[in-house]
Amino acid sequence: MRRVCAWCNKELPSEAEAGFEGEISHGICSPCLIKVTSFKPRTAKQLLDYLPEPVLVIDADGIVKVANKSGLKLLGKELADIKNELGGDAFECSYAGQEGGCGKTVHCRTCAIRNIVMDTLATGKGYKNVPAFQSINTSDGPRIIRFYISTQKVEDCILLRIDRVIDKDLA
Image (tube, rainbow, N blue to C red; front, top):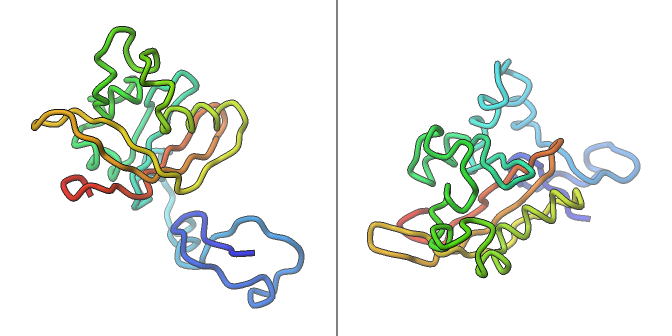
């Protein structure tokens, strides 16, 4: 079984090399363990800001509750601009402005980002590095942006991590 750090995705040593017995489904590498345990964050937001990848916390209604610094940088927005907004509005989805809004247009049924987030909420099953695309409003008009995303359920919310953006202007 291939094992990677849940924080940075680097390869972890095999169970035998690490001196572990039994099956291990996830882990953390030594550098990430030091980062996580060597500071005392005051808020969950401060902890999220230590993650290098863009991360958004989305509630059961598809509403963005918080984003880390990398997520805000990727979106080109301040937290006040996206907090309590639907995901499609935060990302400036081209279809979110249509009748019904984010989550209620004909296009939303095939939105991989929305479907993965909602499935993770319903089942608790996380996804890792899933290709998705979204039509985003830009200053030059609508543009298809490809993402690779991962999800994880925490309590009643989803951590949506943007693993990669395939767009030279946003990456």
